Length: 478
Length: 94
Image (tube, rainbow over the protein chains, first blue to last red):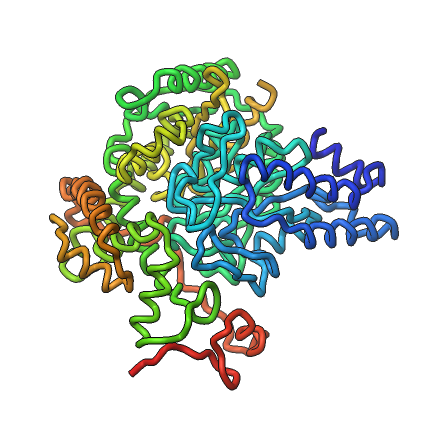
C-alpha cells in the first residue's frame, strides 16, 4: 500500500492504528531474529504513540488533519537520541544510555504523527562501510536480498529494514562519509543525504561535526522526499543549522526534468569498478536522457583522487576529539571507580571501544598532534577548500553530477574479512567527496545484477536536494 | 611519516587507550598502510589556500543572555551510579 493511501485510511479509521502498530512490532521482532536490523525495538513507545493517535482520531481532533506521517513506522539509526529508549550508536561504551531528550528530528517526526519503532544497527559510531564494525556485543545486519552479504554501512540496519519492511515505513539514517547512500545502494532503496546544516544535528551523537548529516532512506522516492520535508529546517539548538527557507520537496516530484543537465564524472568510471555496476549506471543515465535530460562528461580529478585521504584525515581528527567525552562518567558504560583519573578513563575506553573505533581515535589523534597537525589535519582542510571550488565550478554547468554510488556489488562477509582497513576505506571513493564538501547526494536503485542491487549516485549543489529528488522520481515506477 | 611501535604507544596514551600486545601487532601494519596512503595529500598544491573548517559558510550564532529551562540536577545524575551528595563522583584526580 502506498504511504499516502495508508495515511488516509488511518485518518478515516479504516485502519486501526493501535492494532496495526502491534502487528508492525511483531513483524520487526520476527525480521530481527533473522536479519539483525534493530539494536532496540521500542515497543512501549510505539504502542503508546499509536494509542494516542487512535484517541485523537476517535475524538475527531482537528490536529490530525494535516499530519504528514500519521501512523507511519519510522526506524531511527542508533546514533540519534530518542528519549527513554536505549541509544548507543552501536557502541558498548554507551550501553544502557537512555537519553533524557529527543533529537530535533525525532521531535519533528513525532509531531507529524510518525511512530518510532526502534533503533537500527550500525557500525560503531558510524565507523565503517559495511556495518561489520559493530560495537562489542552487537550483531551485524544482513543484506535483505542475500543474507551472506553486507547491507553496506554505516546505516546498515536502516537500509535493511527500509527494503525488508512490508508495512509502511521510512528510515532515519545518518551520513558522515557516505553512510546513507552506500547502504541504500546495497539494499535497493533510495537514500538522501542532505546539505550539511539542512537538517538539525541536535541530539545526534557526533562522529565528525563538520561532516555529520541526518537523512531519510525509503523504499520509494516519494517516501524519501516526505521524510526529508518533515525533518528539515532551522533549529536554534544546532549552531551549525542553516537558517534558510523550508522547502516543499513533494512539489519537486511533479516538476518536469526535460532539459535538466547532468555531468557524468569521468574519473568515477573505469579502473577498479565492477563492470556490471557501470552497465546499470549507464542504463540509468540513458533513462534520464530518454526523459529529455542532457548528459555530458565532466572531469573532477581532485575530489576523486584525494577524496579518501582528505575525508579520513578530517573525519578521524573530529572523531577522536568527539569520542574523548566517553570516559565512564556521567552516562554510558562505567567501571568500578579505582585508580587515578587517567587510569580509570583508560580502562573504561580500552575495555569498551571496538577495534575500528580505536584505530580511528589513534589516526585522528596522530593527525592533530603537534608536529603532524599542519601536514595532515590542516592540509586536509585546505584540500577540502579546493574540492569545494572544483564542485562549485561544475555546478555552474550542471544540475547534478552522476557516478556509481559504490563501485562494487554488495560483497559477501567472507570477502570483507579479507580486506585491510584501507581497502575498506576505498569502498567510499565516490561518496566521501560530496560529504567533505557538504553537498546533498542521493542514491537511486537503478537495477540489479543477478538480483544484487546497483545504486546510481546524484550529487547536487548546496541546498539543491529538490533537484535530486526531481530527477530520481523518474525511477519510481521503473 | 612512518609510524613505529613507540609512536603508536605514545599516540594511544595521549588518546587514553591502553593497547594489548595483540592489538599493537594488528594495528601497527594497518595504521602504517593507511597513513602512507593519506600522505598523498602532500602532493596537493595548497599554497595560499585557506582551510575550510566547515563545508558551508557559517556565522557565529548568539542568543539573548536570558535564563532558559535546562536539565534538572536529578535528571543529569540519573544516568550514572557514580554520584554523591548531588554531584558526579569521579576517579581520584591527585
